Image 1: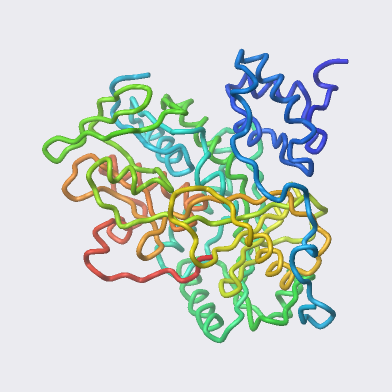
Image 2: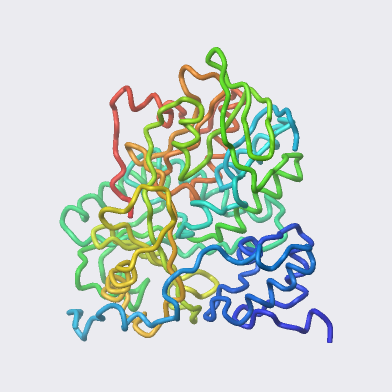
Length: 96
Length: 382
């Protein structure tokens, strides 16, 4: 199995090879890699893939993992459907 | 890092990258761009990713049209290796009040006179464009099919990479800490990575434009206000255009990737330059969205974030130089539409800096317009 066959980010189908490619392109922070590849931007918001990506980045760029952690966490902590927050209109358009 | 430059551009958002690219394309040498974080880390990379030409103020329309024309072939022109996710499925702007309806008719007349193909349409016609639309609260709409979407990160990187190919030096993670001037002229900039001698500095610092102004000893008529935005999980395509309502305070679109992106303004947004999130945003945003686009009911919100609108007095950008300080140039005050104006910003600023005739009349965009007091304010902003 090659790096092209191993998916790191299953929400956005990003492989180890994809990550290696963008690191080679010069993107050496998680924020940049995220914006270029969409890694960690899917429904899991990085909960599955974050540490795997950071390990690759740490190893390939010789930076300690602690220095690579994301600096912002955003709400909601877990994905939530619209109708749990906002009221939705009934038949005819009036709000419930 | 280089210690001498012909020009230093401050800010690695779309404005700075587009200015660098255009200057280099016109043959300028020794161009440096400094960015305190990474490319598109500020307002550009946090924006709603829409491009529209439907404005109520003339210069906004003109700048938007010039930019839209560039965007249509941007990927090939800039020779970028990834996709910039261009989607041209229009903007639908909804009028909920008599006042908005009147403004819509006026805006369409202005836009049409400038060659922008906008149509004033009924809610029945709007429903054909967006079948899930709850038309109950609206009187009319305006629609321009040429408006659309682009990926802000990749678009900005496309400009940055094209600029680098033409010799521009881009220093990311490099923060400007001071600007030196002598006898009314710029002499250099201090950064956390070293000093650069230069007689020309471009302030393209987005949300931090006034901070850079202060460093140069210039009091700029802009301030920054936080705006919030959210993204959902990707779903099958069900919404073609960006949908906007000013009075309901919402813009919402489905990007090519499948996710919905939507944002609002709100009262009392902080002006402390912090990209914070507030607890009530999700509640207000989802409620407004559901009242207009009820099919979003079961769609899941993944994340909310925020960015800065750098507001100018008439909500139109400020381009050009600064009277009394030779070599200090401004591309600021975009008031929430700096990303979609990026290409025009690059073209006009490069022409101005090189002393050429500008594609659009610079006096109408110059900082001196505020002293003349002939302001036509833009009301069509979320």
